[in-house]
Image 1 (tube, rainbow, N blue to C red):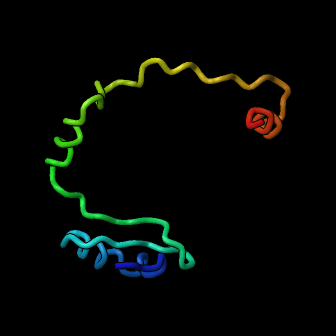
Image 2 (cartoon, helix red, strand yellow):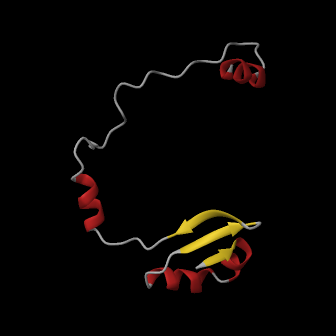
Length: 86
């Protein structure tokens, strides 16, 4: 089913009931699809995800990430970001 954002706001409860029944709802803004509301499925989906080889999470922050760069004093933020994007 496809609905507009306006219709979603007006009838959210009814649309959620349809999703609970197994239907997928696609939301559009100005005739452009922007989101999809899908049923959650069951807990076995998480088990299947955990069984994927090479995929692991130990509950902490990701290791090996370098600390972000500090912005120099006296530099305009927009100019600093623009320079970083070049």
